Image 1 (cartoon, rainbow, N blue to C red):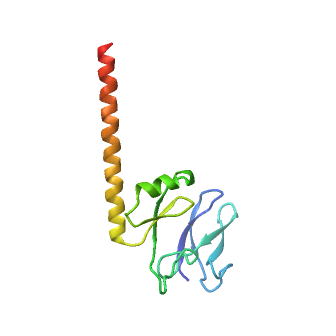
Image 2 (cartoon, rainbow, N blue to C red; image 1 turned 120 degrees about the vertical axis):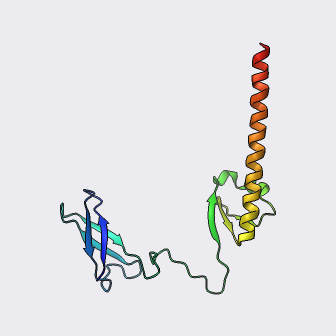
Image 3 (tube, rainbow, N blue to C red; image 1 turned 30 degrees about the vertical axis):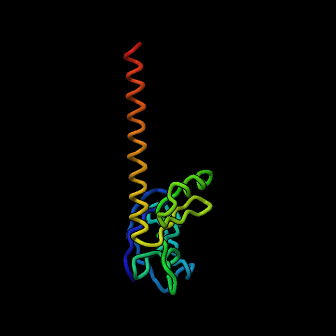
Length: 138
């Protein structure tokens, strides 16, 4: 039985707890109840699996390509984002999340994003300069 450092959600007391991995409350999610030594509050805890991840979020990509969810936008901005990132391999879902299928697509996205940020910064600098010039005239 391994030792796990856990923090009580009620009193914030940190304790090391022995957890019997054979007896989780929820076998699928590997959730265990831990009782705080100080306040007696019961806290549920996820215990990492042998790969270091929580079983409920581990992904298996048997027979299909993985997708990296990396960023997102507001759902009202989806159509504009699709136009801006057209041709980069970026898959923009209806809820606004961006998905990339490969590293080259990710690099294309980064290049386009960097270029858009530079263009926006130059446009803002030009605007600020014109406002400053108008202010000097008055």
